[in-house]
Length: 486
Ligand code: AMP
Ligand code: ZN
Image 1: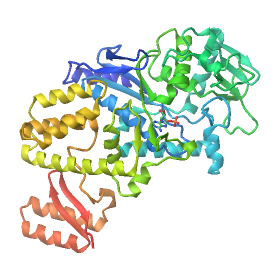
Image 2: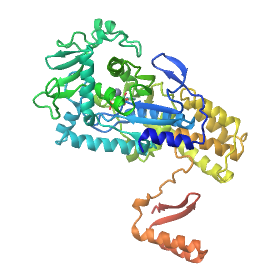
Image 3: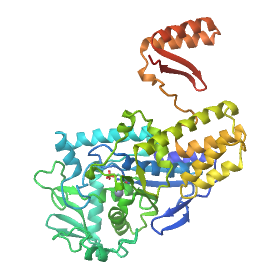
Image 4: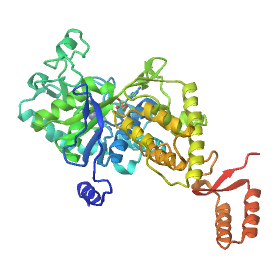
């Protein structure tokens, strides 16, 4: 079954045929708008993905927790969300413009391997990182730019045929003067930019804002393909336009990225797609603000980045980062510090403790409440996660809501926040794959004894397990094994 058939199939079975109202601030209009999808109940959603020449830093990860939160809000509101995050494995040059070396080739030279190997390595690292942040990667397509070269060439060819592109000595460039309204996203005035020379001057281009659709291969380019414009590789922007068209169609509902993409990358995507297709590329554009380090954007080129593995190496749970992100509104710059992260981690620990308590008190039965309505109104109002978090805290710490109302709120919160509130991790719990086989056998013998109500035998086996350095607890989700500290 293809994705569209699958969505229709699921939609038929859907328990929530009514769609809740959701509002977003659309970068295109700078206004708060009611979200209306083109097809009832279906959202076509594209997010610009990572350039896989190194690991994603926590600034990059903010952009993906943001897009995941949009998907969660819409899913809970009753939509079926079809998501694509592209993997850039060619064409993105150092400096983000049309100059410099290809980032993936650079990574390959740095690590003395092939671009393919680099892309594989860091795509896997990216998927692992976002999985640790509770982003459900099974629900997302991750197309790679190098798998869509044919489609990129076809799109560039259409633009050339329609007169939106011109040949240059070293490839093909998009002519922004032919696209009325260029720069509409974020109201970018390219003439002001030109005067201020904020766009690099390139003698081959008619206007500094023109950009390469295809560039001729340099002798040492590690990745190159044949094209109507000679051997070479695609410009960075064309991959998103081509993959959107191939995977989601000519007109999509939502497009996201970090705010650094507004001025150039996203205006270029709009120009390419709308010039070629004659249709609106995306109806809602949403952008997340930067994660900063000491007041500066976290960026690999500035060398001020932190990785998820740095956090976990220091003993932080990956979801402490997710909580840290959710404390700020996505359009507000967020300043990272280890102290602030420690604050988020301890708040999350307390939230987990409260959730465990409420799970016990409510017996995991939920009831409706006015608090839940307020919570949903907050997250559906342009993802007001800080307000939604404070509604959650007030309810869980107070006694206005009963245990079942609180549990219902926790279920709502989990659906939107993805913080493992329904089954909080137990500190020091041993992952199933790390349990030695001998201990696994003892655990199953203990389970068997318990199911036969032979508690004496079960206790004896528990002793055996403890002798091997593990503690056994019977939690609401089943047995939890932790390493005993010496
Ligand atoms: P890149 O791999 O450079 O293409 O970036 C991947 C995503 O991370 C893009 O959506 C960027 O806008 C976003 N991004 C890059 N740096 C930061 C930062 N410091 N804070 C938030 N988002 C960022
Ligand atoms: Zn893009």
